[in-house]
Length: 96
Picture 1 (cartoon, rainbow, N blue to C red):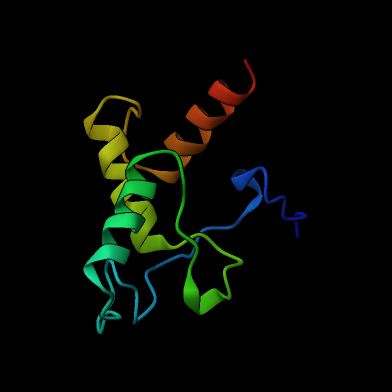
Picture 2 (tube, rainbow, N blue to C red):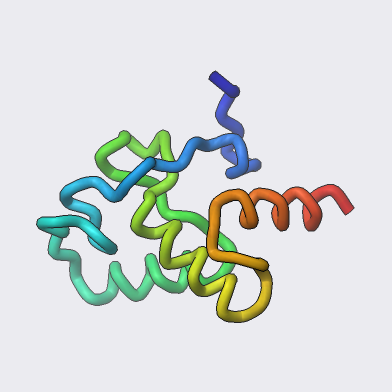
């Protein structure tokens, strides 16, 4: 397993699917205050990630990542809304 580096989110695995209580895409989502949801969405649509509460914040949230992939694709930063396209773009940007 790769060593997790808090300064490089590319080192974190992404959940394969949303957990059952994912606030973004779960079967029985956690009910969060509106202020928390706004903060999470700003983070996802800005420059951050959302960590999965079910994985003890050791994996990136799949529900949050899916929202982020769609957003980055819609604004033209990704060629397709996939983890592979995300990783390739991040590698290009960070290795310049």
